[in-house]
Amino acid sequence: MIIEIRKAGFQNKGAELMLLAIVARLRATYPDAALCMVPSAPHGSQPFRKMMSLGLYPKASLVLAGIEWGNASRLIPAILRRRYGLILDREVDIVIDAAGFAYSDQWGVGPSQELARATKHWRRRGTKVILMPQAFGPFEYPEIRKAIRSAVENADLVMPRDATSYRHLTEVTGERDYIRQYPDFTNLVEGVVPDDFDASRFGVALVPNYRMIDKTSDVSGNSYVAFMKTCAQRLQELDARPFMLVHEGEDDERLAQEISGGAIPVVTEEDSLRLKGILGASRAVVASRFHALVSALSQGVPAVATGWSHKYTELFSDYGIADGVMSVADDADRIDMLMERLVEDESHDRMATQLGTESVRLKQLSQAMWSQVQSVIDSGGAH
Image (cartoon, rainbow, N blue to C red):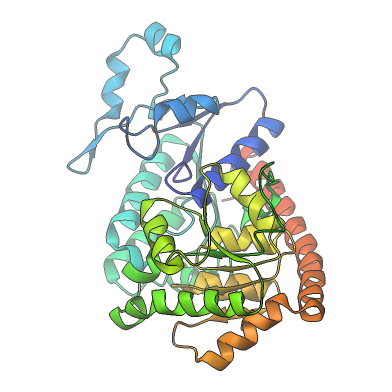
């Protein structure tokens, strides 16, 4: 059996956590399966060397002017393809899509139309398609609604990860028994605390997100740095040992340095499992990166968030702390209240206990999700 993993990868730490979760589970369940991905150019987000480190085979793919040319690789003799581990699209039995958040008006028509074309092609080939738990919508543009409807019709299992995503999706597609809501599945991934992480020095992690600038209105984007500086300053006044934690790439690092202004430490870490370990070892977290928040909450670490889509409010609702999502327009009194709640012993411990209970429940749902995925892989499909 050949399984393709797409959209998860190395482009950001959330995508990498999703990839690691998928690879680990598939290897445990289907040890003889060949797992493949489409590699990028040498300096792209899916470098071949990183794929090789996970034992992933390369899938032949080259899209030019919207046309897939990777199938031309069938002209390469099979003995050479096997020697170098090159997988053709027609050889793939299962496609697992873990986009996280790509199919929405906020990302434009391109991703949704590409998914529609691909799923239609795979349906004709008899390839099963599973869309892992991810955020969907909103879908207001007619072209995107048409594409999403087609993609869902040609998929075998579609899993919105929150109630708002479920509603956005089913408003377009209608209720279907193979559209099933499950939470983000990286909650099952175990983090690794770096040996050199000093919890006595680093207390509350502040995780910035450049998307808060380029995916929000000019008013919100222009207010974001000042808002994060206010949070950091209040945490300093509370002696909470705040530090900036860079969860993604260069844009986030520049943002972290600007917010810090040299007043608080900036911690960078390239390994996604170590990042999760740092978040789990922190006393609390103030973050705008979705998977940084999943990593904190799923480990029982109190957190507050500010975000740029419905996925943040839905995540906090899942953990029973919907009032922990802030707006950059919040006044100083609300910021003070939330920062104090994070670090004051009684409120901190109460929240940590609640998060621990909800984390157990959500991890059980993720286990149930994997059982559902396995049933689709092992059967003729969900519909």
